[in-house]
Image (tube, rainbow, N blue to C red; front, side, top):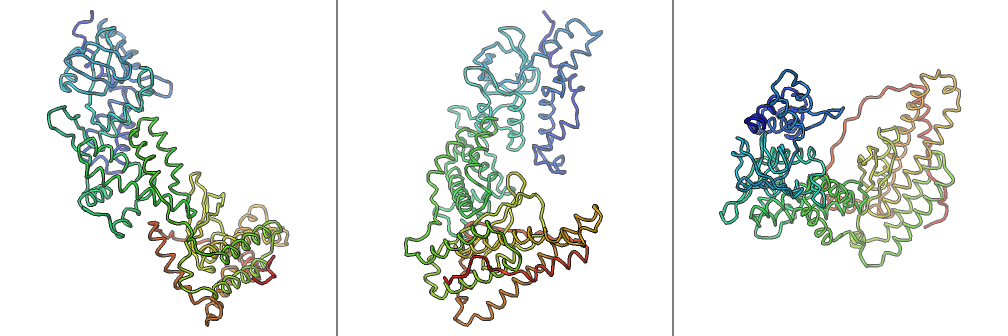
Amino acid sequence: MISNLPDRLSALSTEALAFVARDKADAMACQWLGGTLSAAQAPQWPVAQSLALELALSMPSLIGTTAFDRLARAMKGRSPDDVAAAALLRRSRIRLARISRRVCEDLATGEKFTLLPTAFSDAIGDGVSFGLFTTIDAAHIVAPRTLVPLDDAALALARGFVRPGNLGLGNGVRCAEAIYRHIVRNGIVPPATAGSGRKPKLPFRPDENRLDALAAAWAGLGRDPNDRELAQARGFAGQDALMEVLLNVSIARNAGAPELASAYTRIAAVLMETMALRAAHGSGRGNLDAVAAAMDAAVERGTFPREGRTLFDSLRERVKLSAARPAEDTADLDRLVQRIRALRAKTVEQGCTEQEALAAAEKVAELLDRYGLNLSELDLRKQSCEGIGIETDRKRRGPIDDCMGTIAAFFDCRVWAETAEDGTLRYIFFGLPADVQASVYLHDLIALAFATETAAFQRGDFYRSADSGHRRSATNSFQLGLARGINQKLQTLRQARDVASDGSTGRALVPVKDSMIDDEMERLGFTFHRRPTARRRVLPTAYNAGKEAGERFEYRPGIEQDY
């Protein structure tokens, strides 16, 4: 029998810290605190640093060895008891355990042991604990390192890692990382003692966390949120905020704070409705199917409670989209939209030059203005805004992107850029149905014109005489000039339409359109930031050639019959 075994294991586990990469442990602690450079000044830093070192003891290196393995190899010349104790430490496991009067029950395997006393187990007392345990034999176990008590939310995270059939934790290291991150961010909270009347402290920081502040305000409303308060909630819409809110529902319920749980639930419903509406309007962000998949993965990893996933499904059933088109007669609008769609399909098949594209833009604008002549303000306001997403399959901006704002403005729409899940750019055209269809149509025409005119430029003398190192720059310069010329031509056409707006062109209701779009975007909680445009160097000859080509751009294919 190894003499004074529990204390010897504790002492050797402290020695094993010498084999831990402290910089990696500190980086992990910093990540738990948000990854900022000021993490080391945070009040939670000592706890984060300590728990990161505890976890680092069990984390295998790239070749699969742990700090305990390296300690055991360094035992040459030590006493037989130290060598034997180091061998036991190599078998240590991270466990989820319930301790009661020296009985330690592993909640993931169902095993029961007699817990030998150490300073760490004495400090924790009875309750559900998490940490490193070393089995001595089939009946006895020791806690050689720090144990942490688990609150209800942390216990839910841990249970997400338990494999069915008492097969233990699926990944003890990942489970520990999830638990320790939760503890660092929310505080070490002992579980409520049955019958004691004590409730766990809420991880609730309204002075620091805007979502917590919103939940606190809604919990004290005593009424339904008004439009301003709903708009404030919509501004948070997104996967990370939704998952945080759903987790906080579980925590507030378990802590006996029903008003706060109800406020978080209401916020979650608003976020989900907003995200569903955005997806219906063409946005690729916040798709609820993608959120559900991310939530399932988090539950599998043990970083999100199953209770939150169930609440997500329940709320999703209650989400009702309010963007459906009114039941009034929309035959004329439907006919115009279908015609623009058909023209778009035909154009994509046959291709076009820049002159044809601009001529077509002018003709579609004429159709839209003629349609507007037959509308009253009341008729216009019966329409619902919609959005259509354009995939670029590019991760970087290109010269054609300079045309997006001009295209949208030409047809009284809005446009913004998003980054898709795979890192590619996509654009959303947003406005009234026919205007959005026309914007997409014009975008496709300009994209075809870019391809046609670029191919013609590359067959020309300037490009062919350039050395290979300058050809890419020549093409880019040509396309920048092409975009500039197209933009100028479209802006001139739009100004002419507005000047001619004397009641005979259907442009009188443009201010009404603008207000409708602004109201809908506010309802969807959209906020945007303009990126500064970098200065770009061009080859003057290629740029001017592109600009001249753009100024010739017209917009005519397939639109000869009157609407």
